[in-house]
Length: 221
Picture 1 (cartoon, rainbow, N blue to C red):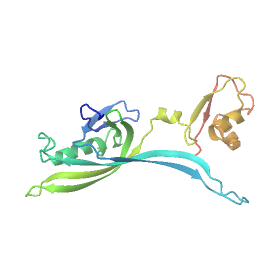
Picture 2: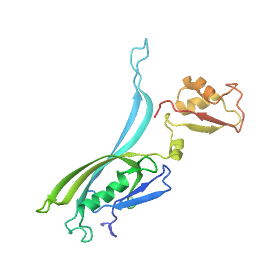
Picture 3: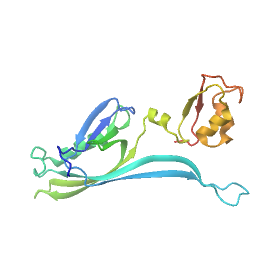
Picture 4: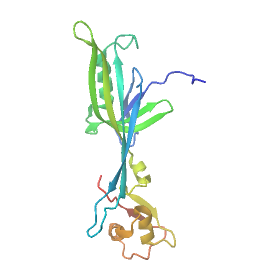
């Protein structure tokens, strides 16, 4: 049975803070995308150690995903008789997603919201406008805009991430030993001294229950 209900437009919301608490504007797509693509990537360290016959493939991090789709802007009046200024429509979209926000010295942080199926926190990385229909005087009436976004993680999201390029915080409990905690985070005890220095530990064995240990990123972002 086909789904019923009111058509939900794609909404692009702009925020001026990385925690998405201060909304500064939004734009409702004139026409929803016919499709969209989301790409995921994993980085591995394939450096070959000296004297080893083969390079090992060791997980480094999962990089933020990217999303791409095409938006159609139609000012002919067929889509919406109240939205017939193409330049104004594109400017409204750019104000939310592309334009420089002087309060944060960068474009806005974005949420892409499409009904119950999509909630994507991101930032715009590129857009390309292709004008396809014009009035006799050259005024554009229709445009196809290809947009690319990159996923954005809030600081709280990052702390909950399990990848080794994020800072982790662990609370010590009785019986915890630093080597095992280091292995839990990095899957490698080779970073033991780095963690000890980062936390200014006097001992690698005597850990105080209830204290917090910080495990820094292995890879600079």
